[in-house]
Length: 372
Image (tube, rainbow, N blue to C red; front, side):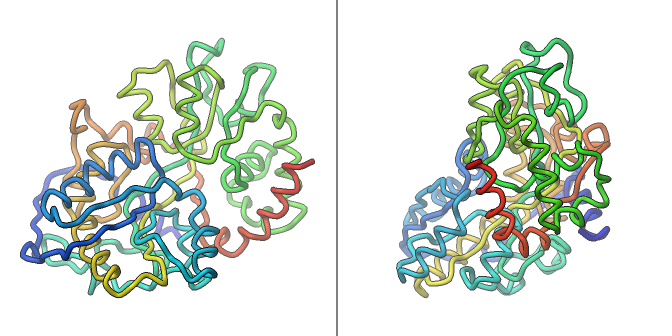
């Protein structure tokens, strides 16, 4: 990842004051039903509060139907495309999956300046999103991190180091990890002594992947796999696991909103982007409805509104100054952001291009390892 992208990731999470207006407020939506695919749990709830509900209140002739299948987005889009029956209208994906979908012809390229609102000061959308536009098919919404949470009442001492996850002697108990190679392999190599700057060079070889899997072997018997972001928070709440990986916003909800005895392990959190893709194969009528919704849901104010409900940073530079306190809790959101200096002492920058190119190949090795 370029230094410019790192700077952009940090900049969009800054906080301050500003104002916003919708310069196409007079646009009218035609009657439509939109199937919007996302991740479920606290994340979808934040979208519902910030985007879906306000949009349907403003345009009651439109119904938004939620589908929580984003973790399977690319293979399902492939199957729909092959069958000639695309039933999704808008899909929320991580940046690497957006790149894959775009490269495979499963998503439409979007002219953001033609489709999306300008910033309040007239800045074009492309400049407002800047380096976060990592694919011509991708409309970024948020900057987030994947990190670990742990049960404070199930450990004898606080977890402070990523490699505590691999230390079953000091921290016995089950771990909840996502059932995919992404992030797990990076963390395994970090805890096997690979320098952060060399992670993706090592992962670029089969031997490097095997090295990471060998490290994961040391805790494999204690892993409970997850496929949806809501699973780790639930397992932590139930005491089923001592520690688990998930998105920082899910852990924020568990800790601050639900008051569970859980703490964040920020060490070597992995920064990433999440946003929209429009599936190739939807009708022209549906595409028009999707673009109308996107104009509303990705403007400066709406992206800032989502950050009031969950601790993810808005992807537009003009949105960040509008974020201050949590909409319901009234707490300052700055200390809960991934890029807060106290949280970002050790950070790994997710390599979108690497995983866009290598995902299918490494998936095969990972699946073979799972069955050993």
